[in-house]
Length: 215
Image (cartoon, rainbow, N blue to C red; front, side):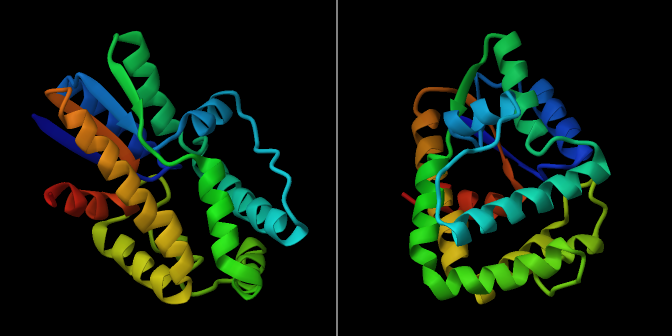
């Protein structure tokens, strides 16, 4: 049994090409993507979440979404398009699709609860300057690489280290917890399929690989 993990940038054209090439080369029995069904449905129909949240929490989510949208305009790639391409290929070729990510509503709810008031305030103080274009260390690192390409491993590690230092709760909930959830689901897929291609954001690759090596 073989698992091939493809690390992507959700707004990079290079990611779409890499996913298509990997699927064509490996001819997997199953394609697993870093989505849950609700998030897939929202992306497929270009719908934005309409979650009722307190003002500060809603502001944080809106700012994060707007920042990603602004970056995607520079590449003309809809955020997560490489995931949709993988699912589309699977659907057209009779390949099993697996949504391996944690439920998005649970993740957001847990993140906001764990952050607390001061954590949310600190995040807002980072997001607002970044949103208007003021460079902030650890947040606006995008100038360091071509948005059409997947950032290299050193840049990814640097960003993760900065995230863990500045926002340990965000790192734990959005990276570590989801890595564990996705690794468990991948292990289940290994038991049922000979070849699995896994498509996840580049920031999850090393963490998931490490977990898959563990018993």
